[in-house]
Length: 258
Figure (cartoon, helix red, strand yellow):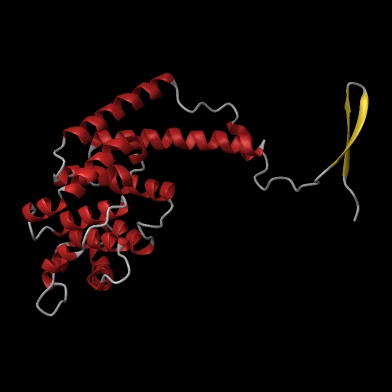
């Protein structure tokens, strides 16, 4: 085998070194263009801090056991900014876990979305809670009630919740089969709407195993089209945070490939 070497001159002395003879990077010089890229200017940094403070206040001020708090936590996670509020989210979900039985007894028993969302957020955070709450949505034969198909939002939340089932939870196995079948049947009726795209994406990519930044970019698009329930402050923060992170990643790739 031929030994690859490289000769350099240092302080007038020739030095011969071994050379790995590595292939050039497949990226070429593409990322070198980001060498002088500014991650965030002072105005963006100020805006980022102000928006973060506003979202923090929302997380702290919403009642701990309210559906609004759960929706806010869920949205911050889906928009990719939950890492900015880890302490507030952990405190809220810890409180919800401690008072879960009390919350279940108070919540509207027909609100599939609320129960499924709470179940998923707690399981996702590492808190084990029983799946017995979903039995109220089954009939005497143990099948999920047919009228649930009219609650598309709840069906989607249940489909996402069962991704966090564990072995032996037969009711959640049944819920997976039920929601998968019904969502696929309902999808063609949604006429390529924003909701249709969200349902289609959920069926293709598990909420549990998706690539965070890719799913974040998709959800930003879904969320900003939902004008009725869109939290503009949270959306603006997520978009700015995504932009800053994207530029930071470009700078890092420049350092790696240079």
